[in-house]
Image (cartoon, rainbow, N blue to C red; front, side):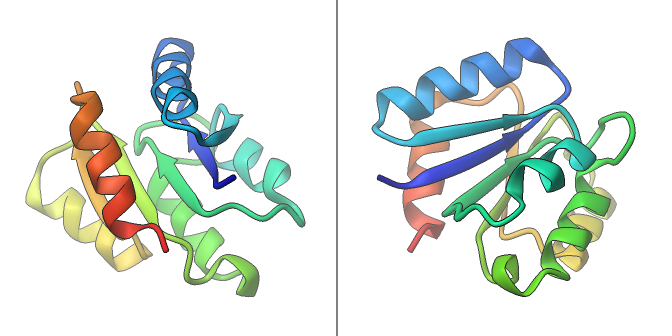
Length: 120
């Protein structure tokens, strides 16, 4: 079973995302921000990361940057799931190592299609 880490400070978004992913057959690990995500990842194998950008403590761009610096997670697909749609934010995300970008509110089918496309 493939495992997806979801990182979002909104309990509602985490719950919604988890429901969609679990109903599609994925195992889900939830984190509330970048620090929490890095702590929960330690030594765990994940197949994909879904992260928000705007979060307290550590935002999604910094989290992606730090995730990419860990050899085991260097090539794992990272999808930014965010309300941000400005080109400069997308550029920052891409520079940090993001694989894809989905703007909230998201469509369930779109989310699953993007995940299937980028996950090995």
